[in-house]
Image (tube, rainbow, N blue to C red):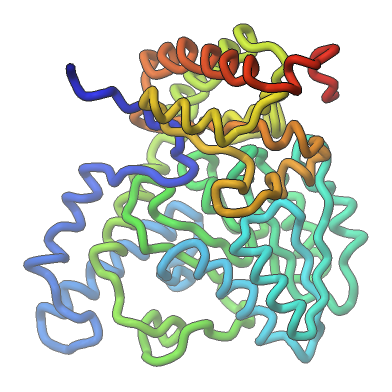
Length: 397
């Protein structure tokens, strides 16, 4: 028997490293290993590589190279943006505005600050996961020192009206941060036209290496350092630079933003065919997130009467890698905070499945999922007492 075929449909969790990216990185593990802080010539090669990567990231965001700071990933970038602004502006105010659907790197950071004297407003979202700009404006006070709203949701794929939200922040002279970890390579970003003052990203979400990220900080933004100890990153982020990772990040973002429209056209076509097939073959389903204002590769769909974890295990047996909107797999019995924020009932939230497509996916992958998934759902429902006692279809509007 041959090896079981693997269909990877979890690109929102992480991506592989593209060959071009790995090829760019390899010399900085071996030949060009010099510490950029040293003064001899091989250190200069490392410094130049970092400068090149900084310029690549800046170009992708419409920023200046001097506004780009390399970190260890999206979580550090989010922590730096929020804690750094809070610390630097504590004399001005103690109020932060975010949303109920943020990544935990933002939510847990805000909860930490609440324990230390800060007040946080968690904006609600509508049934599609969209923030109402009017709600944001009403929440701003004279004590507001930061607004942090994610660009695109990692679970349901909804893309927020970032330019409009940023304009409101700019109008009230409040720094605006966006966690854009899921957005790079999927949407066109311009920090100036979209009124963004701080932006977080992570290379492993767009076919770059793990362990490297970026925080864009608009020139003139008052922010304290998060990590102390050395003069790296222009004295803003201590620690010997991850040269190979930084090189990979620069190359990856250059490739990811070179043809966003072409990428989206191909991925969206696969996604739409997969979604249409699921909805045609499996009754009692509910698409989570906005039907149009969503990431091109994202499908988050709930199946009534069953649980997402069971689906994941059965799909994995068939070689299909996916994820669930429920947090049960991380040791919690609570369903996804994102799905609950959209008003989805708890029992339906538990039956959610996230399928996120990427560069490796093909029509053959879609065909396999459309063959396997209906059988999995059918078998699980046959074992479900909830399904056996059902009296009607999906009651989610």
